[in-house]
Length: 429
Ligand SMILES: [Zn+2]
Picture 1 (tube, rainbow, N blue to C red):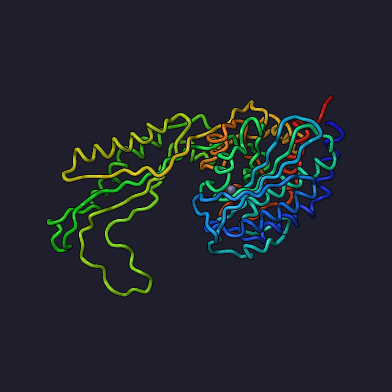
Picture 2: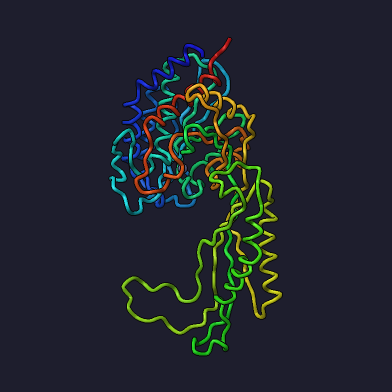
């Protein structure tokens, strides 16, 4: 191993306390999304921190994106530090938002408590631990290899948990992620320190509405019940669509293995009267519902085409229509994201793989995420194919009560990130 690589590893180990303190600082800022709380505060914190290592920083508000308002502005930070000569740019992208806390915590969700080598709190694992690890990796690399070629970028972006439109999507549209500007992207999502995540499955969300005719509930034959029509749709899904999806397999190494097929979730179902307000003690009115709406969340594979995903739902609805008197429906497509998978021989993949071997002494495993993350925007809008997710933390802990990140895991993945910087940016001439 290059002697500087060992020095980099030792220096990161020596900054363990700094890494812990940085993670705790980030966790103690409750950047809950929704609604998108405290984005400016965390961006300003990151700006102060990164300027100390010579980064040029830019705070960018994603004006007029979904959720952006005076009260909850969508702030992002992009920091860039140039080397002494031209070369490639390595970009670490972390989302700064965290999901709601939920119940059943035995720790203060925003306390950042350190116990037995783990830091607890909402967002420790997903993904402030990864953000902190990438910052320490960059700081140590800059301190020990100040004459590197190319550039390092670190971004903290908004709204990943709600689609990323006020974060990476906005920045990609503004030209922050293009193959000319950025050559390698690492997203430190919690995929475990020895795994490289190449991409994710696709998503198609749609709302199906069945129509009926309102009438008195005591004379349902005078109306037409939209909920029963929707029942027929669900029945047909159980009979034909779900079994067909379960049979579709993929070359994508999706984890967990249960997601290595097409899946569909029936996300919500609303028909008839609205839910009464809490505390209302009266009875519902006797009404035949004239509308029923269902939201479906279809996750699809790289082997499937989005048109086919849509068409098989249309075909199913048309089949029910042909068999069922008075059946009528509306299909409202909400959003869709194509599956993405970076090639295993892409430069960022091979360099991170080598760094994992150097630090952990094991060959990495290659995985694909069941759900999407910001790679979708970097691929689709930025046209950047050389992108992976790699970071500390156990994926299953994301969004759970008593979420934590292990300090050893953070130290080791910071070492992997720093050695990757060394391989990509060290000036060899
Ligand atoms: Zn995340």
